[in-house]
Structures are given as C-alpha cells and as structure tokens.
Amino acid sequence: MTRLVYFAWVRERIGLSEEEVDLPAEVKTVRDLLAWLRTRGEEYETALQFPDAIRVAINQEHAERDDRVQGAREIGLFPPMTGG
Amino acid sequence: MSAPRPIIRVQSEDIDTRNAVHALTEGRGDVGALVTFTGFCRDEAGTLSALELEHYPGMAEAELTRIGEEAIARFSLLGLAITHRYGKMLPGDQIVLVAATSPHRQAAFDGANFVMDFLKTSAPFWKKEHGVDGTAGDWVAAKDADDSARHRWTK
Image 1 (cartoon, each protein chain N blue to C red):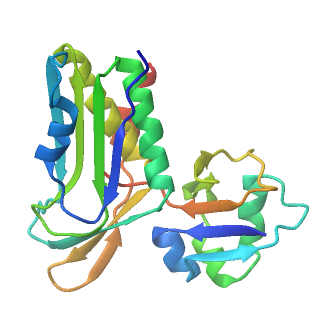
Image 2: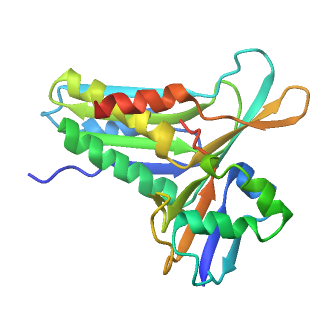
C-alpha cells in the first residue's frame, strides 16, 4: 500500500487530505501515477486537469516525472510552493 | 572540523529572533558577521485580513534541512537557523526567519539570500488569502520571479 497525501488546492479539489492505495502494476512513473489518478473520479479529474501544475514528492523528496513510484511509502501531490 | 548542522524549526508559534541569534553567536569568538532576514505577512491593498499557511509535515523540515545543509557547504557558514511558521497569520506577523553567521559579511549575506530563494520554490508551504470582506479567498499563485531568483544561483 502507498499513502497518497494532498495539499492546498489539490487537497481541496480532491476532497481528501490523504488515502491509502494499491498502485496498479502498470503505474510505474510519476507521470503514470498522475494519469491513473485522473481516471478515479470527477474530483481527481478536476484537481489534476493541468498535470504540469502539479508537483510530486516521493517519500518526502521532490520527484521528477520519470521517477519510479513502485515501492514508495508515501507520495505527496501539491501545487507549486508559495512559502517564505 | 565537521560542517555545522542547520537549526530548523517549523512551528505555529511566533518567531523569537533573539533566541535564534543567541544560539548562533553565544560564546563564540569566531563569528565575524550575522545576517538575519525576516519575512512578514503583509497587506498591500487593504484587502487582506489574514494569510493561512499550510505545510507538509515532515517534508517541510526535511526540505529546509536539505536547503540549509547546501547553504552551509556552499558558503562555508559557521551557523544557520531557519524558522518557518504555519497556521493563520495577520498582517504584520512574522512568517519566516533566516539567520546566517560567517567569518566575513559576504558569505552570511549570500547564505541567507540563497536560503530564501530556494525556500520560496522548494519548501512545501502554501499560502491562502482571506479577505477583509470575510471571504476565504484564493491560494496564492507561484511567481515566475521566484523561479528566476532561484536560477541565478545555478548560472
């Protein structure tokens, strides 16, 4: 199982702050993950309709689109950061 | 001598700059320069009642540590403290503190500047604006200028 955690408007649009999922075997990379999540319902489709605007972290470290997701304990999805 | 570790705090409480500075300078004769930067919640147009800062617990601390370690190595800092708040902030409230020490001023200035540029674009914090009219407003959009500021360090 992989824990997905959502922040800011990604969290608000999906309507969840976190959930546990079984990643299908065909979901290999961050790019695959974003495409797969969009098929899980209208809220996901709305939240992830502009995938380029979504940042992803694997096990709390920033990840690139080609990074592999299988075996990850925790994957975070969020918009570009605006702290400071 | 091994490199100093950055002092990282992610908290809802207000920031005590004096305490942070004390931790970096007390009892040391090798510190020649201290630079502190404080970022505040501001209301430019009279329309903001509060900012809400959300963060990614765990990753926020981890990312600030990574940025801090890189700054210490790159500028040979003697010490570095980064404190970032989360929760609700009112105009005039402190949001972030960076304090850097070094033997000479340039490294401390550059180190603090570097930390802020990277923090803005890679530390997992998000601001939401609340309006004076009672509306829970929009999430603040990331700025291209912040990306440019970060990239000047890789030139």
